[in-house]
Amino acid sequence: MSKPAFIVDGFTEKLVIGNMCPGKPVSRTDLNGKSVSIDAIANKVASLIRLFNNRHYPIIVVIDREQREDNCSDLCQELGNKLNELGLNDQDIRICFADRMFENWILADWDVFETDKAKPESTDGLKGSSEIKKILGSYHKTTEGVELFLKCNLETVYQNSESFKNFVDSIPDINCRELNFDK
Image (tube, rainbow, N blue to C red; front, side, top):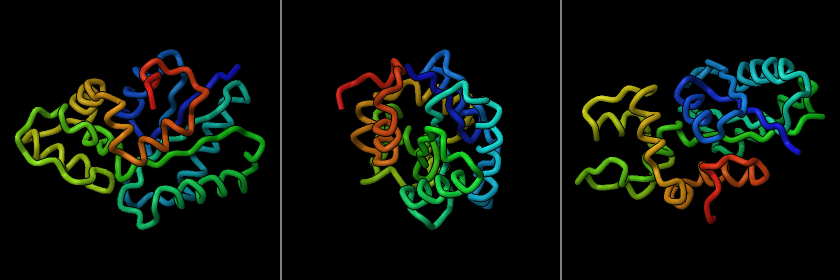
């Protein structure tokens, strides 16, 4: 039986994951930003994992790609390697990078905006929060971001966002009521 825990970038992600997977611990790195190195993220994630003291498995890490040049798959590999170098190769750690940011997953269900503005061909890779601000006129991550995400049809997000699909597919054995949909 798994006892998962999540490690995410910030408050918005913590609030959303907490709603999607109630009762599962969610810790924040508070290291989001385009200038944060993978080494810094690895060190912070490693310290949070050690605080779990082997009480949680798997540990699901969800980080924003931000402006990093590497693709999400390469970043997952790089962060995984760094965590192994830090002595965590005995842990069940699943790593996912949102492409570019958590808001891109919201953009993947364009209908949530109820707008006449043209939907982009692909929503992964855009500057998600900037795009939402263009649509809404203003945008507050920890209130509107959470509300918008919780309105999303996650099947639609899964179909339209490769990075969200990778996240969901990495945790098929985790019982999160919101992620129980046909894939």
